[in-house]
Each structure stands twice: as C-alpha cells, then as structure tokens.
Amino acid sequence: MNVVYVTGHRNPDTDSIVAAIAYAALRNALGDREYQAACLGRVSDETQAVLDRFHFKAPQLLRTVRTQVYDLEYDTPPTIDAGVTVSRAWQTIHSKKAEGVAGIPVANEDGTLYGMLSAGDIATYDMGSVRNPDMGDLPLYNVLSVLEAQGLNKACMDTDHICGEVVVALPYVQSHLLDIGPNSIVICGDQPDMIERAIKAEANCVIVCQAEVSQELINRPSKTCIISTSCDAYRTVRLLCHCAPVSRICGHEEIVSFHLSDYIDDVREVILKSRFRSYPILNEHEQVVGTLSRFHMIRPRRKQVVLVDHNEAAQSVPNLDQADILEIIDHHRLADIQTGHPIYFRNEPVGSTTTIVAGMYQERGLMPSEKIAGLMAAAIVSDTVMFRSPTCTQRDIDMATRMARMGKTSVEELGQLIFSAGVSDTKSGADLLMQDFKEFHIAGHDLAVAQITCAGSERMVNRKKEFLHAMTDLLAEKEYDAIILMITDVLKEGSVLVSLGDEQIIEQAFNCKVEEHLAFLPGIMSRKKQIIPALSAIWG
Image (tube, rainbow, N blue to C red; front, side, top):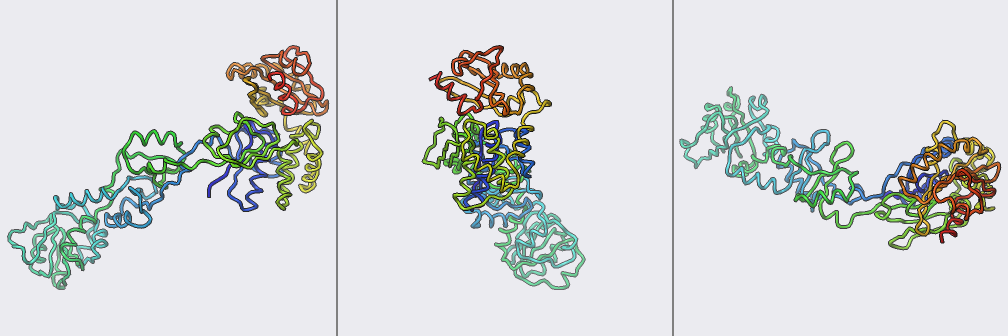
C-alpha cells in the first residue's frame, strides 16, 4: 500500500505539526489508506513540549518528495544463493515468479549482492561445456541432486568434490581408445569391466547409468566414487555441467546497482550510460530486494501528499512538482500551488487549521482519543495566541474548549505550557528567529516574516542585536526585500516588529515610525491576517 504523507509547512509551528498528526490519524481510523504525518523541519521547543505533554512522538522528517527507487513498481523476482546449482537456477529463471524478468539476483548467505544471472548466461555456459568436457570442482551434493543419483561406495562418503574430463564409456565405444586416468569422470552403463578398469585407473568418479553395480565392486577399496543414476548417458552428460554452482557463471564484476533511496533523476542518468537489461536494487543494509529495468522508468509512481496549514509552494516540501497533491486543508490566503488534476481543497477563515481538522472528526462521526483531543486543543490555543489573535473565531474558542475537555485538561493549563516553552534564554537569536519563519512572494517582492509569541516581550526585545545579526546574514544570503521579526506579546496584545530591509514599506503599511529597526504595533498579533495583507496592499 502506498504511503500518503500529510505535511505542514517549513519551519513548522504547533498547528502545522498537530494538524498533520490529527488528520493522518483520522484517515487511518476510517480505513482509507496508509496516511503518515511528516514535518519539514526541526520541531520547536513549544511544539515538543505539547507533544511530550500528550505522549506523542514528532512526525518523521520529510526532506523532499523527489521520486525515489522505492516509489517505483519494480520487479521482485526470486533471489538465489550463489551456491545454488545451474540446474536449479535455470528452473528459477523459467518459473512463474520470474516471468518477464531479464535477470535474477544472486546473493551471498547474508542477502547481500553477489551478481546477476540471465538465461543467456546459462546458455553461454552450456554451449561452452560442449567444447570443453573438463569439469571443474563439482560439489558431490550438487551432482547427486541434479542427477537424482546416489553414492554407492565408501569413497563417496569421503569425497566432497569431483572433477576431471568427462569420458563416455558405453558398450559400443572401443574401450582401448578411451583415456581413463585419475583425472577422469567416467560415464558408463551395465559394464562391470569398465567399472573395474576405472577403479584400477583410480578415476575420480564413475557414474553408472540405468544399471546395477555388483556388491563386490561396491565393497572394493578404492578412491573412485561410484554413483548410480536413473538418467541415461546422454542426459547425464548434459546435466553434469549443470551441477556447477551458479556463482561460477553469473556476472559479478562491474555490476551496476541502485538503492531504494536513490532518486530517479540520478538513476535515469546512470541507466542511459549503460546497456544492462536488469539492475539489482538494494536496501539500506545492502541486501537485494528486487530488480529494475528501463520499463519501470517510463511512468514512475509519484509520492502522494496532503498539505495542511499552507498552500504556497515556497513554504511546502522541496520538489513538490514531482509529487501528486491529493488534498489541501488550510486557513491561509490562496497562493500559488497548482495541481495536475482536481483535488479536495478545504480553506476556511478560522484561526487554526486544527480547528478545521477537529470539525472533520465530528463530520465523520469519529470521536478523537483523549490524547488526540488534548493535542488539538493545544494547537488551537497556540495558533490563536490564547484566543487573542484577530484571526480567532468563536468556532476556534468553542472547539478548543471542547477538545480540552475531552483531553482532560484546560485551555489555561495549555496556554501556560505553550507560552512558557516557546522562548528560552539558552537558545541563540538565530534559532529563535527560525523556529517560526515563513517566506512570502508578493507582487515580485521576496519577504520573510518570523514570529516569536511570549507572555512579556522585554527579554526578547533586549536581544535585538542578536536578531539583527542573524537577519543581516539571511538578507544577504536569500536577497530578501525585507525581513520582519514579530515579537508578539500575549499580555500587551500587540507585537514589536524588528525589521531589516525596506523599512519605509513597514512605515507606510502600518502607519508607524521605525526607530533603530524597532516599532511597536498595538493590536497586531497575526502574521497572515494583519502583516501580510497590509504589505500586499502596499506592493499591489
């Protein structure tokens, strides 16, 4: 089953993380598909405190949605051990499980890659054995298995391998022309005299086809293995070369392989420079998991994502254009994300995306668990700044109160937890700046707005030099037109703006005076409903 990633925006806040967790839990509870919450950056101290309070782990970090090998519907043919016989390998290649596959992987005992084997490799080896009847070391176990034979004398118990030139000594062959010596594998029928001659010559092995061997010859002390098979001589000769381990004939040098985590763009470049028909795929432990061919690259399966708490490409997961967006659930302005097909888009003018998700639980007749309910209450309290944000609606207040009750907590307790954890004197100015940092593109202008929410802003304002130093570096690196840090004071119900860049825009947009990069804006607490709309109006 394909994973559907539910992800919020970059530099995620509590609402973004919780909305992803809660929506993924809702869809999984309804049995729709395998939905998995993900985040696009480090979880802030505030969010971590909320997650710890309700015993949740942070979602997995999703760095990109570029198509990778594990997104493809690659082949999973049988993987054979390097010690398997050529005969068994031939059966495997022509089995139903390997149907349509150009080659099958050959692995070591620990599952790591040894080589690749194709029907052409076996055919080439088979034709070569016609010209060269000399058999290398063949494991006796292999010979007995492939020929459906049995060892008759004690020498078979003392021997692990047989080798030598194959000598066919049938009754119609002029025996005096046969060169039988210690380095011979003699194939004969009901010929006691030939068996005796092979024993005297200390031949490596005698294979008796479709005949009985006298007890006297079996009991005779000898170094020659005596084997009896029900196969006729012709079949025995042909099958003998198939007793070799497949490690001898498979390709194992300069094998081009890929890992499940490799990106398709990179894989395609490698395939275009090589001429193999099949490529082994390895997991993170270097073990073989399947094979890849050019066919699989024609229409790769893309990652599937649900976006929550944003609908702007600059705030979303990198390489979003390579993924399929299934849904968007948000409470921000409409931005620039485009899709290749119609999707479910839900955008409502409320203070928190989690408010929308909590309402979807009710719509679908599913009561959230105590932990999920508490988590959602905390997210709403956080994003509405304890209901003081101008984006807050009565619906946010009602939903947060209900979720807190179901989570056996209170909005007051959650507010104290959130606004005490959000700021820390031990964190650097750069870290505080980036913990809730968003980029915007407005009428050809590039802007970044960060926000720190606290109960009492004096400590944060006193660290202005730290913030300006970090903002200067970002301004030069990203070439923003302006960077704004909102230090939002819950108690004063306003924000101190620390700005850098085109400060005249700030003064025009908010009818204020910026002095030494600072301006206090009473009643300004929302980035999306107050800061961005005002700048949009100025920039047109």
